[in-house]
Structures are given as C-alpha cells and as structure tokens.
Image (cartoon, rainbow, N blue to C red):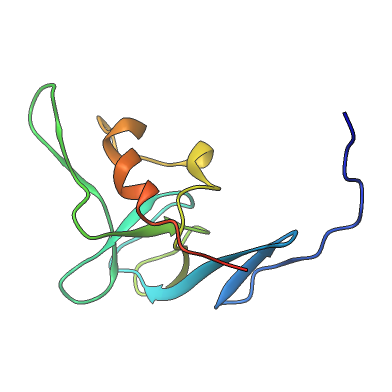
Length: 118
C-alpha cells in the first residue's frame, strides 16, 4: 500500500474549496440565527441560512430537510455571512445535528447535494 505524501494546496475562498485535486463548490449566505460549524442548513423564506428543524414530543421525531441547502463551514452569528459547503459527501462525519435528529434523518438529502467540479 502506498501513501501520497506530496504537499497539497488548500483554499477556503468564498466561491470554492480545493482539497487536493477535488474542487468543492461553496456559497456565502447570511444567517438568520447563530449556527454551529457542521450544521446542515436550509434557506428560510428570507433567503437566509437556518438550522434544520425537529418536531414531535416523542420518538419518532420529524426532521424537516425540505430545501436542505448545505453544511456550514464555520460558526456564524446571526446576521453574519457564512460559508456553506454544497456537498455533504466530504463532511458527513462532522455533522452537528439538533437534539433528537440522527444522521439517517439527513442522509438522503445530503447525498443529493453532491455538486462537484473538476
């Protein structure tokens, strides 16, 4: 088994992230509330980032992933612009989900976010 030990170049410019040779599309949007890095986010009716919502008083809970937009790249305060990865593929291990939500609740919507450019 061989390992690639070559120096890699990484970038977090607002329009893209380059990890090695893979370019991952990102976007910059304003946040409607304080959000944590790794949170799957949706666009609310104002076009701002909001956390996915969980409803129900007991299991099974309902997780609203309609309009799932991406995964937040960094902590962001309300009203600030946040960078959003438009792909769930590379960042699924670092998801920050609301209480009572599971990775399985957002798995399919995140897979559908796979936007990659080469």
